Image (cartoon, rainbow, N blue to C red; front, side, top):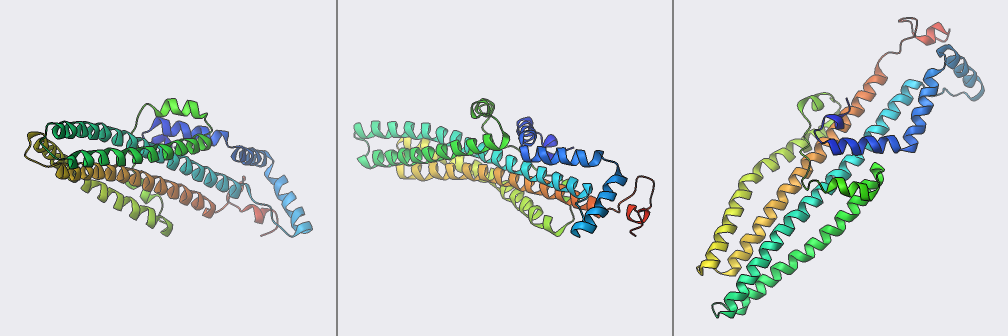
Length: 298
């Protein structure tokens, strides 16, 4: 079973399956491989000997072509998956920034009311306006990046942007992708050491964030309550609010980092399995005698 079919995200699986099916280059390679495999094996080796004599070259075996096609599919799937994770990450960031923007506006209104009541100086209103403006600029930037990421995903998955937008509206969270130990064990190649280490590091970073997030939110709530009671200043609320936002964004980034590390590990495991198939000894249709020997070329 393909890793994306068991990743626990039906939309991701749908996007990858459609992107693979619509890829014209992969389709041509699959048809060429099917035609090659459908020919009689003895005919293929006669042609191979003829080409050897004429061009001094050996045609690529169907086994090699099958591995090359499988590798191309793995890499294409990984590109779609990474684009999907990027879209979900930016969606989550937009949703988070919008929640904080609403809170920032509420805090700014309260600061303005306190200034009009003569309870605080205009500094509070200036800080509140700065907080709203900075976040508005960040929101605009993230939305622009999200539009570009959605266009990239639509192109890679071969879906109309309008159709993709309907599906993506159903959620705004980073997919909880995480390769299990079986995926890591499937590839003992040194090339997989990097993805395995990256996944471990991503898990550790993400694991440390929930407590920081709770502490930051508690501090922001306390600072807001203190400001409304008149026992705290807006500068403290400003710092507490921005710290809470930063920690929440760090958690989104950590989830995306873990998802990308899992995708990389799954992909490398698939590539390792393909290479392992190439290293298996070739068998002839008649039994265990290598075809080269049966053809008199051994």
